[in-house]
Image (cartoon, rainbow, N blue to C red):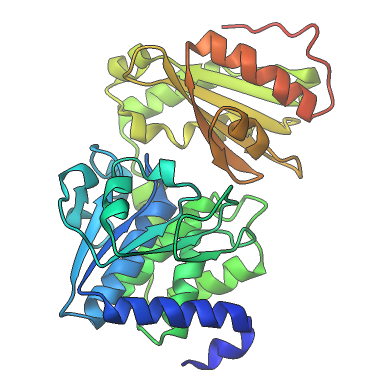
Amino acid sequence: MSSCCGSIAPELQRDYARILELIEGARSIAISGHTSPDGDALGSVLGLGLALKERFADKRFYFLLADNGPVPRIYRFMKGADLFVPAASCDVDPDLFISVDCPVRERLADAAAVLDRARTVVCFDHHPAREEFASVSVRRVSAAATAVLIEEFLRWAEIPLDGPVATCLLCGLVTDTGRFQYQNADAAAFACAARLVDAGAEPARIALEVYQSQRLGYLKLESLVMGRIRTVAGGRVAYSYAYASDLIEHGVTSDECDGLVDVVRSVVGVEVCLFVKETECCHRVRGNLRSKCDLDVSGVAAHFGGGGHAAAAGFTYEGSIVETLADALPMLCELVGESSDDLHIEL
């Protein structure tokens, strides 16, 4: 394998060798990320899948969406985005199922049924997991993005990347580091980004498509969310919210709202923040958490059945926006070391 092997731990090299053996021995391979896919889940599926598809032209590849929804608009520029199919409509029994960016089987949603029919399961992920569900798991919680692990595996296996495929992986890395602004933007992340750009990835294209091509309706919704920002715990915790009716009024889909939490995060003095939005389902709320320091918000997400990283996590809550805030904000106050006895939730 490539000269990078010396920098990879022997046990990881054994895992990579086993995964490559499984890929080479499979005739059909299904690849899926988690439900409500973000840039890392989508970019990692495409980066891995397209690179393997080019190397192993005789195999059948299935690029799965864990949900029935479409690829979010801001990620449709990536090569291969039109190859995704909803997992619910995939009736194959793959020889190999590869899960990317997903710490628990439940977050595969509809794709879990395809996993159950697969002969073998492999996982690439950078989230902590309660238990492994794959035959071979490459899990490194210190990695800035799953895309970093995919790039490392492909480099180890000497599977080349063209520019568009490298762009898919760079998109995953850029979005999961918040444009290299989050605490996970370490030296390894920048080194990976440099290799991807050297392979032809286009950071300017990613910036344009993901961050600089917002529709007017979204910007008006962002302004509304900005006007609703409130702080508690002496200004150390911030929150804001959007109702389903707000999304309808401005013509914004739920998958376009991922970046709104960063508006809340930007308030000076804030250490942790929460953005919540109603989904189309009655009494169901999606919460996004962020930390600007070394405080870990993933435990709050886990309390509600969600997950993520120390600095970025999410969850789904069965209830109203008021109920979600009433349950989550006291936990965030406690996280920053402030009392929630006098907490007043303002809407």
